[in-house]
Each structure stands twice: as C-alpha cells, then as structure tokens.
Length: 264
Image (cartoon, rainbow, N blue to C red; front, side, top):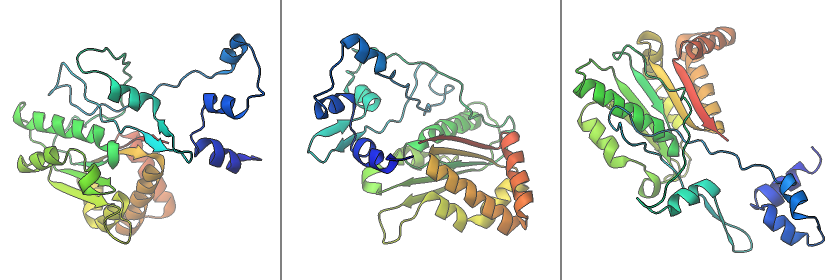
C-alpha cells in the first residue's frame, strides 16, 4: 500500500503509459525481447449492446463515449478502444468484435413492470430493452407492463443521449415514466439514486406489489449507490429490518429481478 496515493496521482491520474515512463526514465536499458515480455497484454473492452436483435437482426449498436483528456503538460490522452472506434472509417474498415452472453434478460412475463437505471452510456442496454418491449407490443401484439427509466448526465445540452428516441418511446406509450437527473444544472448535484429515493413509494409498489425487474448499468460507484438506495426503500417503505432487507435483495438477484452490469 506504500506509495499507492502517489502512484494514482502521478501515473493513473496523469495518464502515464509505458512509452511515457521510458521517456521519463531514459536510464532504462533492455533488449526489445525483454521489454515485450514485461508488457502486459491489452485488456479487452466490454460494451453492452444498445440495440434489440429483434428490431435490428443484421446489426449491432454500441454506445461509446470517446475518452479524451488533456494532461498537465498540454498533451492529449486518448482512450485506446474508444478512439480506435471513433477513427474507424465507415464501410471501409473491419472491426473485430467478440460477443459474450449478457446478464440482461427480460422476464418471460411481458406484463411485469421494468425499472431501468442507466446514466451516461449506461443507457445502452436500456435502449435495447425498450426497443424489445416496443417490438413485443407492436409486432408480437403482447400486453406489455409499465417501463420506468432513470437516466442521468451532466448537462442536457451536452450529453443527453438518445433524447429524441426516448421522447418517441414516450409518444408510443412504451416508456411510461422518464426521470432525468442533470447533475450540473443546479447548485446541488442530483443523481439517479436521488430521484429513485424521491420516488420511494412508487418504486416500492413496482418492486414488491407488481414484481418489477430492475436493471442497472453504469459505473461501480453509481451501482453501489443505487443498491443502497433500494435497500433503504425496502427498509423505509417495506418496514424491513436490515437482515430482512439483505435477504430480500438477495432473493431479487437470485430470481433475475435485480441485475447490474457495472464498470470501474
């Protein structure tokens, strides 16, 4: 643990890569073979698909935020995968993609309500699920239960993703409630978990009385905050003890009614 804060400040927060380290430490001398053996393999980047295969059977949609950060020395740090995708020429370059099974699965009973919580690019699977729910309603002629979406971003003028599509979902009565938290548009920051807590009675009714499924996608911190908020709703609205709340939440996860896909 010694030196961990300094490592985070100078290396992680400073976005210092291997090439930068070699430039900072010119005294390092080694053969290319030795150097390559020390380099870790580039880790895969996982993105949740943001389209329904029923609606788009021949294509896969991704929702990717391009990572670009200016370093203290004025140079620009670019995310490896997001920048690669952004710079790929449309219809002329092939991108190698590998798929793995998602944990997001709609309940077989289409009448059950769905609570979707996906701020930022976490909206990706929520868009896919809403597309699927609309497909169930319009194409399969199935009765579809209420759909509630919690979305958050810093400013609606900058990163309100899929705004027009969400409005269309509302017009088609597939998105019954849309709660949006613009965290930087007022003095006190507001996040999706704050709106969820504000709607505690509605949320408890959907979860407990109407057996709603909850899907959460986004950063780990947000996911933890949402988890704690739902626990407090169980305690406050459901009158549960801490032990009962823990058991209740475990039951939701076991039954596939509380699903999270989070990233650090």
